[in-house]
Image (cartoon, rainbow, N blue to C red; front, side, top):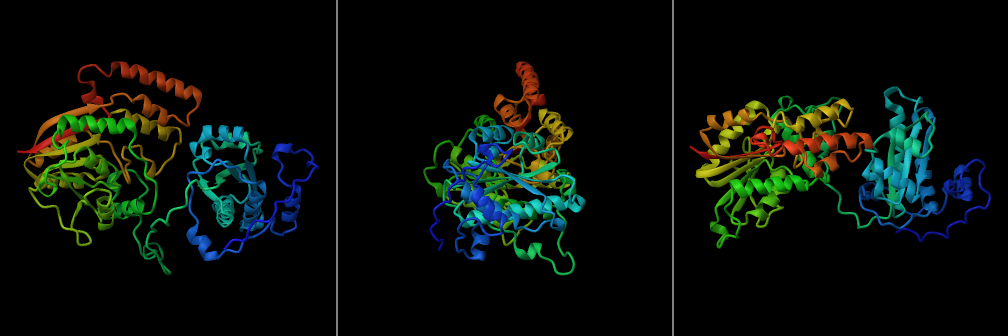
Length: 495
């Protein structure tokens, strides 16, 4: 058990020369830290508990954190290893609300806690093999563990926005490299149980690597189905907070359902005898859960690549969904029964697949449909403003890697927008007949612009909003949404 904190030492009266008064902590505590002694009481706490109980906290109480506690956290940081023992780190503690508001304008993640610690390292020190980044990261881990022991929560922020602006706001000299920001505060809610981890047997290797490399490319053609299954399983089950669909995405889905799958709005009189609906590769299950609420007249099943992800999705639904496996029975999951489903949905998942796997999936979905049943496919259209956003993101050096592809739901894994004729060709080859179509968002809605431009400069925001406003004025031209709408929905029936 933690010991009660001792009375906080009083702040000294003599300011240190050249440092603004509001930037000073406690000279007494600083002197203790410089002597090598721990500044303040150190609660007794089991090492392994600290390792296994620490959590990333995303919601904090507004209560201020005493500088004495922050000093203890920083002191733990400076005892981390550093390259060549240079210790070329600097920590700027920001507990001024006005300054934190300026930081939050660069990245919303810096607007959640009462304290942000800007962690920097000498820009020209230990650059080889990113040893400077490694040194700063070791300090952040020490501080995160120390904060947990002291009853505080932390969030390791890597998405800081423009790092040079962060550096300028807090007055760091140009030779300091901003590595990350550590948010500190009192957790608003008790931390949840620990998230699942990738099994140790999948990540630990003795003497020689024995696993399979996971591609870092967003190009589906580079992803073997088995590797995609491994990646998605890890992402879905490891406790990440997946972005919920934005309001403009939900509105598009509801419009498509109203037009193309209007049945099932009322709960079934006998749920056991309700028509069946199969959601294909739902991944996080966020959209599946919404579908079940919007169409309670159906009984839902899900088909996924792994038993773990299928069970994760099935557990989100009431009543619990039945689970099936694709591309082959996995972990004992059966294949979906042929001809059993009045509705089959595949929403923004064809874009994840290699062309050969995509054609195979469309053919198998056709077989899962009952005679006269409806296959509803949603995809992001090639040549829409989605591709323009991707081009602009790559050009300005935005976040790269497969995990940052701009796609609804979100996409977990590779993603490539599709030509409408690709989807049509694969549907015809599977013996499907198109029964309806809807195109939406030929121009980005205002809500999406606000989301995409939240970290952009004022001039960029103004120019993009002006261009988007002009595009929205043309959106109602006949056929434009069908030809250029980002979101495309197609309904098919078995021929």
